[in-house]
Amino acid sequence: MARFAPPISTSDPAHATPPAAGSMPVNPASHAAAMLGDARRRVDARLDTWAVRLADRIPGRNGQAVAYALRSPGKRVRAALVLAAYRSLGGTADGIDGVAAAVETVHAYSLVHDDLPCMDDDDLRRGRATTHCAFDVATATRAGFLLVPVAAEVLAEGARELELPVAVLGKMAATLFEAGGVNGMVGGQWLDLRAEGRHLDLDALVEVHRGKTGALIEASCALGAMAAGGSDADVSLLRAFGADIGLAFQIADDVLDATATSEALGKTAGKDTAREKSTYVSVLGVKRARSEAESLAERAVARLRDGGLDGSALVPLAGYIVRRTS
Ligand code: GRG
Image: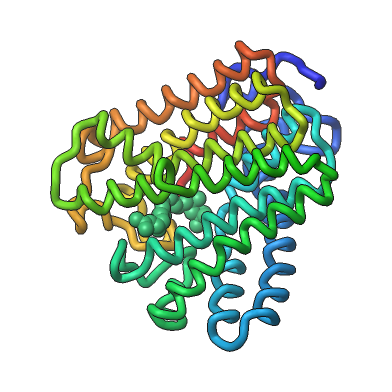
């Protein structure tokens, strides 16, 4: 695999590795925006193909609700991380879009269920009505569950296009669904729900955040590495990078919930206070929470540098994750 020194800073354009002429802008913030735009175009096209297939396969409102959830316009940060991790190890094939779309499918299911009245009870998501408001609670619950096996199909389709050995697909499926399970996203969400109205200390908060949000982001980076045929050491390195920026992502989310508007976020702001949740902001305050997220992003970037991995795509995304405004 091609390796070269990654840029050192997540924000200083002077330290960014210049992209090839005519490809990406040099400024890290615009580089990240361009990568997210590219991920959105590619992965949205794939999710749309699946939405059409599923609306055809699943009769009536259940199929329509699945399509509605898949077409919901997210930022596609997890998809961009899959693509960036893949490229960091020299991957170039388009089949990686299927791997990225599989992660976004798991994420889409989690948002549908997170918004249900029995969980976060929200009516706004990605600037639109949540799935249970656009349809009804029973339909949205079914649509969320239907998306889980769909994610496995989307992943398998991407792996076939990439001509990955079945053993690699097996490891990738285990990585994705373990991250979505009791030791990852579901477990973190469970702890988060249990903690409402109670004070958590920082260690407990880290456990919630790493599971609820961090696990899928960590898996995104590991999956990109696996798809590129990375060694165990490469996969571990990108997994550790993903774990740091995954935690940083949720800290930034806590800060945005406390400081941004619902209009900017496309979801209801101020929910954490309203639901009496312990967050990095309630425990540390906005300033220290921001600085903790920055430190995690810096540690993530240092891991790439120390491992001699190409950080030209990943480093700007790490910067974006902690400085984003939505
Ligand atoms: C059965 C307990 C139990 C859980 C089911 C619902 C669920 C599984 C998990 C919820 C996990 C969750 C919603 C975590 C929050 C993650 C998060 C910060 C989402 C927002 O991500 P962005 O900002 O959103 O990337 P977009 O809309 O851009 O994709």
